[in-house]
Image 1 (cartoon, rainbow, N blue to C red):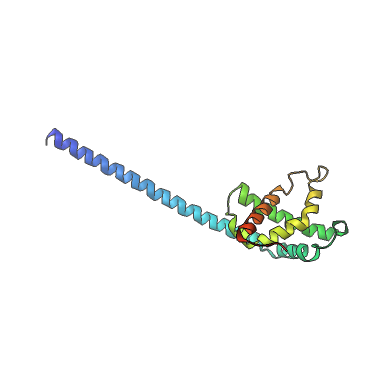
Image 2 (image 1 turned 90 degrees about the vertical axis):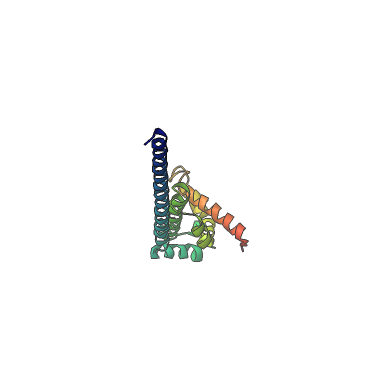
Length: 163
């Protein structure tokens, strides 16, 4: 075997090894992407389950049906408790969506958009009260406001009008 033949075979072998390495990296990359999509789907399902818990749905119903036209000064402790539950669940969802980026925003701003907007607007005074320095501070439920803004933008993009 001549040096030229040896060098050609060596080059061919090196190219095959490089090709195998690149193929391996592509397969690993595709597997990683599939795992990320699976994790995102599982995380989304967990947040949906959290928001659909009966006690959370009952609290949202209380806020939207009973507190909508009730002056804040007339809210009872039970009313404030329901409002706090709604605010904290939407705040938690917002943290997972916008800060941790564990789930996409669209399923929530689309499907719960009206509820997010209503609840934020109804609870605005309660949120302000809880954000006073003597209560919980200015960062309390701040992510709920981010979720509200995203729901507003989604509604505007969808052409939803407020009544």
